[in-house]
Every structure is written in structure tokens, then in C-alpha cells.
Length: 446
Image 1 (cartoon, rainbow, N blue to C red):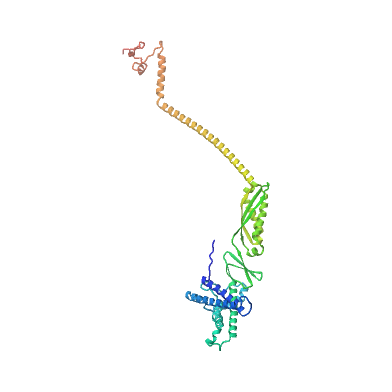
Image 2 (image 1 turned 120 degrees about the horizontal axis):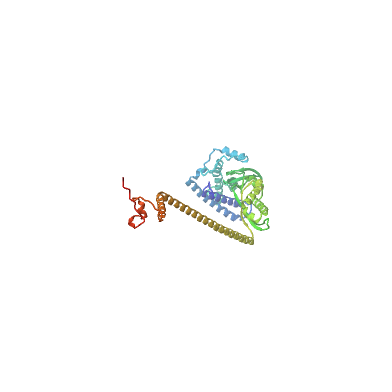
């Protein structure tokens, strides 16, 4: 995730501060050479460079004054006595006892009360003294024309100019020391304050003020980080050489231990991971190694976490990236896998055919059963219909058949009532020409 840097001072202010510091430093360098402290550029060249730097600084100040008044930033330098005693107490004792800073720097309040008083002293005392003395120093040949030669002495002008230069040097060193004593610790960092070579305290995110030239700051990243374990060749239990690499995810939980208990954590963790990878994979067969990634990851993480605990580091995850056997082993494994898949495919095909035949036979048997049940039901229905409609008629038909057989004989005589329907049925009426049918007359009634 990208982080945005927020500046308290605007771009022109930063340019002005750094350009002013550079010009003042260069003027001090050439000024001390003019006074014979050392020889670097030569007297004449030093005077010329000093003059150029002075005019450049005056031009820069004119622009700075114009910018401050047009933007309203001049209000930042208005002196105040509020919290001055707290600031003095902090710089005398609080900075050594880790006391919180009494002033919070913002864009609307850039300078603390002591800084405002220091700038006021610089504007009212140092600047006029050094500029007026420098002006008279530069135009020494014009004193008579100006009528000031009776009131000024070159020795005193040189003295005040040199004194103002030393005061500016002290002021510049103080401001620079104060500026370099302020540190900003980001949200994901912890700051270890080292005082005179010994650990002092841990600073949280935000502004941190250090004792100039005494304290130093070590930043420790508290975010989760990743280490790549370089590929290495490892021999498995069945004497197969494989190439293995991994990644380690870790997070610092104790910045003090992480900084002082181990010199190079990345190198130590990588070496430890490679050693334990050789041990873990060396105890397993090749097939087991290829299928037991989770087991190896868990075992390696537990070993690394236990080993790095005294260093203030928590190993959260270890992942094997690749396990590459030799090319011939890979080819053999591919052939084996292909054969195994073809075998499984043949088995599945045979099993499918068998299941298809079984299902087909079961379907035919069920169809025959259903067909037989349907025929039986049909016969039952026919029998029931015959029972209802043809039983009586079949009985009469049977009687007729019996009668026909009986009547077909020549010696037997039957007496049948003349008005019976059976005569017509048997065709025994006289109209059909049967001579063996003799009608009987009834006796006369007495």
C-alpha cells in the first residue's frame, strides 16, 4: 500500500531554508578565509565569492519577506510566552527522561514558543548587526563621501561583523541540531532510541525528539515480510535428488530483540530453513514428498518459529514453492501416471459395460414380468366376463350336445312335448322331413 508524505512546511519554505543555510555556510567559509583562518580560494577570490553570496542572500530574503507577507505566513513568527516554561523544562530535563513533547507541530503552528523567540532575536539583533557591518565593510572606500569616517572605525566594524558571524554560526548550528533532532516514525514502524551507544527506549509512531549529537534512532519495520529461500538440491530417503525452494512469512513482535539479538535475520532464517528442509525431505520417499507439502510446511514453520522466538520474530507461514525431481524421474513418473490413468480408464470402461449389461438384463426381465402380469390380468378379466355372460348359455349348450348325442341313436325313444323349443333347436319338426319323429295324440277327455 502506497503511503503519502505530508509536509508541514510548504515547498518555497523548504527551498528558502535550505538555500539560506547553504549561502550562510558558504559565506562563513569565505569569511573565515578573508580573516586569515586558512587559505582555500585566495584572498581576492574569497572576497569576490563572499560578496556574491551576500547579494544572493539579500535577494533571497527579499523574496522570502514578500512571500511571507502575501501568504500570511509571517504570523508563524509572532512571539508568544505561552508554554515557554514547559519548553525550557523539556529541553533541560524532559528530553532525557522520555517526557512527551509539550508542543505539537501542525501546518498552522509550525514553530514552538522558543523557536519564535529565537527567530525574533535573529531578526532584531543578528541580522541587522551582520548586514550593517557587512555593508560598511563592503563600502569602506565611500565612508568619506558619506561623512561617517569620523564616527566609525574599521576595527570595530570588523569586530561586530565577525561577532555577528559567530552568533549566526551558533544560531545556525542550534537550528540545524534542532531540525536534525526531530524524527518522524511511520505508523508501521517502531523507533529504537540509542543514547551514547546504549538502548534507551522505544518510540511509537509520530514525532520523536532526540538529544542532538547524543541520541540516534533505529527504525524497525513491524509489518509482515517475506524471505525467499533459494533453490537447493536435497536427497530423499529413496536416493532421489530433488530441487526445493520456499518462502518464509514473518513479523517482528519485539523490535528490541530483533535488532540486538540477531545480526542478520534474513540470512539466519534462510540458512535455518535450508538446513531443516534437507532434514525433513531426507526422511521421506519421493512420492511422499510430492504429496505431503502441507505436512512439510507445518513442520518447517514450527521449527523456524521455535528457533526465531528468542530473536523477537514470529514466523507465521512457510510455503514450499516447488519440488522438482530430475528430468528422467519426471519422465518415468509421467509414463507411470499415463499407464495408471489408462488402466483406470479401461477398468472404468469394463465396469461401465458390465453395469450396462446388468441394467439391460434387469430391464428385459422386468419387461417380461410386466408383460406376463398384463396377460394374466387380461385372462382374468376375460374369465370374469365369461363368468358373467356365458356360463348359463354354456350349460344349455352342453345339454343340447348331450341331447344330440342321445337322440342320434335308433333304438331309443324320447317323448318331447310338442310345444317345446328343443324340437326346433334339434330340427325335429315335421317340416324338416324327419320320419322318425311321431307326434302323439292326447287322449280324449272322458
